Image (cartoon, rainbow, N blue to C red; front, side):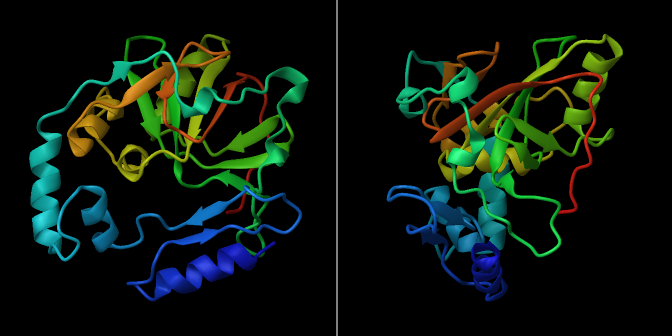
Length: 239
């Protein structure tokens, strides 16, 4: 309750601070962890890209630009770490995870702050990966901020106009570059999974979801699946 957010914020303000892994979370058994700021410096980004950690901003930018010009399609696999334990129906409970209250004044506890939300455009084969925040309302109810000018908002508007629920999946705890593309802004219709492959310089392995018609990074630590109804809104935030 606020401690994790305060510690991470202080480290982030130091500019060259490390990423911090909290291994002992009050009220949770051993093994439940929170990772803060996995890419809080260009040094970390360079490491994630397999570059010299002392690479300059210009060197990182030029290498990033070179890689994304050569997208690499993902590959589908049959299993992965995210399939080791599956909870569906009444067994699914987001509060099982140590979801922190990050800032005083937040509207709730936020589980999705470094992640990818995966959506499929109903009018095409385009699959969008975006870093759309998610606040926990209930054990099986998340709230998301859907802005009309973002790709996720454009996709959701099509489902809503058709009166259909929009399926989604959230991948938490992938390796850094796979998650990082969720915060990038490629043109409409570009698959971020292809860009993740480009940055990694090898294909992202995807696995089929359990309850929705979507594919997620097989090596994600946690995957949340669900749907967004076309006619239900909740107050979300502030964050």
